[in-house]
Length: 560
Image (cartoon, rainbow, N blue to C red):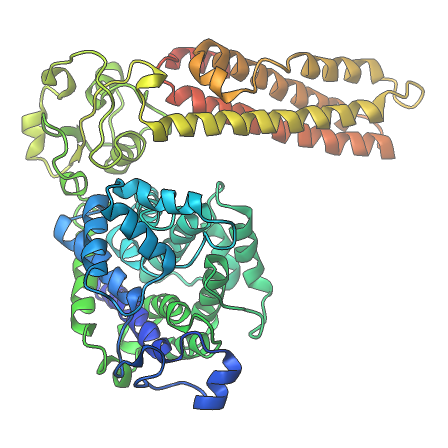
């Protein structure tokens, strides 16, 4: 059961979102100068204004967050189809405020696009500058409550839910970052502006990373809110984390002007989680008709997230998608990362290994990586259901340590994988090729600086090392070839590992020489080559371990 302080922070998160939304609604699209000219400083709920609504009227920010929260509460976890359906029902109710990308994505879904492709279709059709709005980051807060105890799942569902309407990585990772901040605040962590950068995912877009790292250096007049997700998130984080009270945070955000309801809503969610529901003014809450439901939903979500201590609520999260029923895995000590082959069923893994899965690892390994909501792999060969069920499965059903994960069929070839997995493998291969090119360039730099024999007696050794690095280049690059020819993928991984060894040796040799300008430049380049070579190896490893035709033992042999 969640502590009273956690529950109060969870309520503050959703109520703060609504307060910021409602306070900002009447002055939406107004500049800061116009707000000051017409209202002085907005500190009270205002009637009419933009959209001409009564005091305390919420907009699409809170309404869509309510759709998400109701789905999480009713379904017991993330169900993308259900969320998209609720968005459609809301859209068909003729809301007075709706973002352009959100409207386009919902119409695309209504026309028959899958829920997890509608947003991507809209994104792909829009030019840069009109494809990364703040319409998903404004509604994502409920996931921070429902998945507060399991970071990997929270990040996954945050991105997947964003992509229903906003598939740009700046939006999906923006939701991941915001929900990481909110989850930390709900649990009483004291987050300073300079701490937010720890929520940055290594694969997040550079523009988002830069905006978060800049937070520590901003002054109160620096944030510049707009409908662009990066501007919105940076401004809301600054106001939400730097203010002395929840009221100050929301008032500061709204009076900056522009997209006042959304920036106010996000800053309100942050400040509400930080200071708790009791910090929000009663004079605001009394005008918000949805306040009672928001508080109730917040408590429901945060209590559900503590049911098994992980934030994962078993079969209710994946629904009952599998025709043969769920697989149950005993929740024991965690296994190491990468501990199972993706083209094996959970029971096969347990049969082959003495290690068992914790609840968190079961979700990470068997739901996030493999299942995709209600989607199974192409079944290449008939397999009786019993082969995929643990012998003691029925007994484990009654165990509080049992974790429910979806069944899936086995893809025997890369062609049998769902397109998202194939794209992921190709993306890793391309990342490896890019890092490989960078490593080659760095090796060239080393050779340029150390071939003066009079200056460096060990030139022959270093030249030999760099030639080894160069000679191993060339087996990997084209993603289409490597995904269709898995042996070539292993060769690429092997060559990348050789470059890592080569760069390591080169760094060691240069580090033992008497420093000169040339040696120092060469050392820096060699360290860069090592980093790029490691990135290349890691990318090829990730692609190989996901490939159904590549044996895990071969991957491990290369890596070792």
